[in-house]
Image (tube, rainbow, N blue to C red; front, side, top):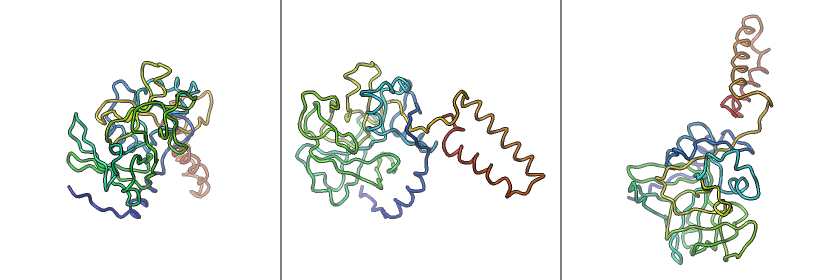
Length: 279
């Protein structure tokens, strides 16, 4: 099928609105690995809940040189929000990179920005929520508002250092370094990075999986804000907010609406930060 040409200005404006999501420095399990979900479902779930799927780089911070992964251990192995596209070694990216899911027959397409179409041995990267998935029958088209190109993408599996921006393996093979990742790649693929392993093996925390089928059921981790109150469970906090709203409704019968604006704004801010949703 011929790819539909999108107006990038409209796409960016739309995604700026969509990107007003729950964000923060912490991580939470959005979907545990067991039973897990295919990537398409995980993406839809995150979007429906105004969440941001944790990026490959953010997962590296939790997995390597940190014990943070223990707080979200049920998520591994997991999809990340880092969507990628790469062609066969030595082949130009062309107008679009395509791959087919062997399990579902779904055709995944990543349109290549014109300035990158002649690049070889490179990988395209976009981070959630800077992209959407356009579904047309068995075709899934990645529509990205922001696309980065990482050059010197390795042609062989092995240990490599990651790039500064996204943590994508690049350059020459490395014998050992605290920051190395083990790249698993295939000939050509469109799909997200997979991280972690449920076996809890130290070396597996360094695995950088770019071969997994998008139809495989895996977990999903999402960004989460800082906790605002210590010693109060999410359920207790939601109850407190509910009572506060009822009290405001009662006060509204005796006070002018403008005198309660501050309280309404405070409760609204808590909702936006995700506290009421269980952070």
